[in-house]
Image (tube, rainbow, N blue to C red):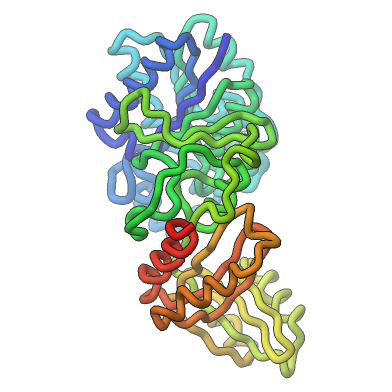
Amino acid sequence: MEIMVQKFGGTSVQDDKARHKALDHVRYALDQGYKVVVVVSAIGRKGAPYATDSLLKLVDADHTALSARELDMIVSVGEIISTAVFTQLLKKEGISAVAMTGPDAGFRTNNDYQNAKVLDVKTDSINKAFSENDVVVVAGFQGLSREGHMSTLGRGGSDTSAALLGAALSAKRVDIFTDVSGMMTGDPRLVKKAKFLKNVSYEEVANMAHEGAKVIHPRAVEIAQQAHVPLRIRSTWDGVDELGTLISDKNLALQHYRGVTGIAHQVGLTQFSVLTKNLSADQVFNLLADNHLSVDFINILPEKVVFNLNHEESAVAKELLKSKNITYTLVEECAKVSIVGAGIMGTPGITAKIVTALAKHSIEILQTTDSYTTIWVLVKVTDLEVAVNALHDTFLLQN
C-alpha cells in the first residue's frame, strides 16, 4: 500500500468551487493507485466565519479571559468543521472516506497549549481505516495533550501535521496545496520578475520560509528532511498534472546548484537600539527573555545593542524598557530583506553587490548581518518594494 499525503490550506477549501478543485487532485491520486491522507486547514482566511481569526474574535482574543487550554477548544473547531465538510463531499462523490480529528489520527503533544509540540504520531487508526476506505481526512493543526485535552500546534500547524503524517506513514510524497503554483524566487505580489523554481532542496526552502516566504512552514520542511519524504508545493487551481515545485535532497547540490535561491522579506518590525553604558548586553537580553520577548536580527556593539521585535512585542518592550529607566531609541515600520542561498558562503563580492544595488536607489541600510546561507539587511518599509526588486534583479536576473 502506497500512501500520498495531500494538505489543503484555507483558500483551497474556502467554498464549494475550491473544494471541488481539491477533490480533482484527490481523485487523481486515487487513480494512480495511492491511498490518500487529506489534511485540511480551517475554511477560508481572516473574515470567513470559521477561519481561526474569526473564531478567536468571538472570545475577544486580544483581551480574552480564557486560558490557553480553553482557547485551543475554540480554535480547533475550524479544522474539525473543514474536515467534516470535505469528507461529506468525498462521500457524495462516491469516494470511500472517513473523517478524523487530530487526536483521532494519533497526534500526541505536550501541554504547551496554543503552540504544542508533537511528541508522537500513532498511526494505528489511520492504517486500520485504510482497510475499508481509500481516503482519510484529518483535521490539521491539532493533537491531544498529555493532560488529555485538545491542543493546537501554532502557526503553520496544518503543514506540520501533513509532514508528520508523511513521515510516520512512510508516504511516497507530501503535496502542499495552496493558492500559488509553487516556490518562487521572490514574492510575486512584490517582486515583478519573480521566477518559478522547479526543484529546490529542503535547506533552501527552509531558509526561505524562515525568512518570510509563506508558501510552507519551515518546521514542516525540517520534518520532511529528517524523514527524507519529498514535498511538492502546488496550486489547487492548477491541473492535476501540474507538479509545482519539488522539494527533496536528491542530487540537488550537483544538478541544481545556485549561488542565490531567492529573496525573502518580513515586515512589521521595530528596530531598538539600547545603550549599554550603565548595563551590559547580557543584562539587556536576559531582561527581554524574562519577559518572553523573542528578539531577532541582533548586533552587539561596544556602546549599544541593536535588535528587532515584531509589532506586538515592540509595544511590550517599550513599556518594559521605560519602566526600568533604560535609554533606547527606535525606528518603527522596518522590513527585513533576506538574500538566501547555499552558495553564499565563501563567495566574494556578495555584500558589495547588495550595498551597490541599494545605494543606486538611495536606500538606507539600517542594519545587516549574515550566516553561511543568508545575508539580511534591514530597511524602512517604505523602501521595501524597491529594495527587493533591486536585489532580485542583481542576483537572480543578471547571473
